[in-house]
Amino acid sequence: MKKDQRQGVVYSTNPDFTYQTSGEAEATTLPPQQQQLRVQLDKKQRGGKQVTLITGFVGREEDLQTLGKLLKTKCGVGGSAKDGEIVVQGDFRAKVLEVLLKEGYKAKQIGG
Image 1 (cartoon, helix red, strand yellow):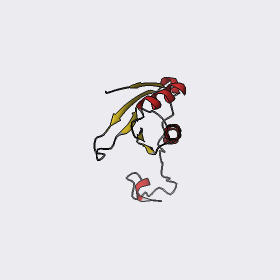
Image 2 (cartoon, rainbow, N blue to C red; image 1 turned 90 degrees about the vertical axis):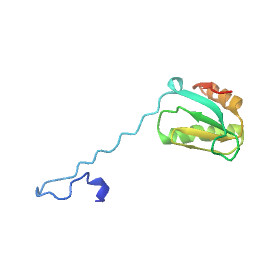
Image 3 (cartoon, rainbow, N blue to C red; image 1 turned 135 degrees about the vertical axis):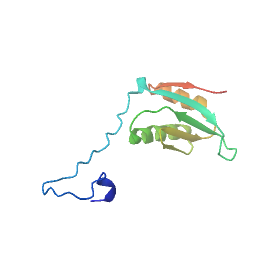
């Protein structure tokens, strides 16, 4: 067993002792109608390049990846989806907002 899975127990004299691992419960994905997504244009820390940033997604990482792939495909550009954020390269705020609303998500544009 790996050290980080022992949860502070180094040794036990109990012959019937077993490590109790508490697997983290993965967040369940909210239905699209309950998601509060925000679409904005971002240029910070990106070398002056513009990206469309979608934040506020609540759910599993796989579902975030799926939504990110859908948005990148519809816009025909690259990007990434991680840490609850989807980044689409370029200024596609209007198109991303249209796709999200068509898919049933509650989304709104923030910022200029």
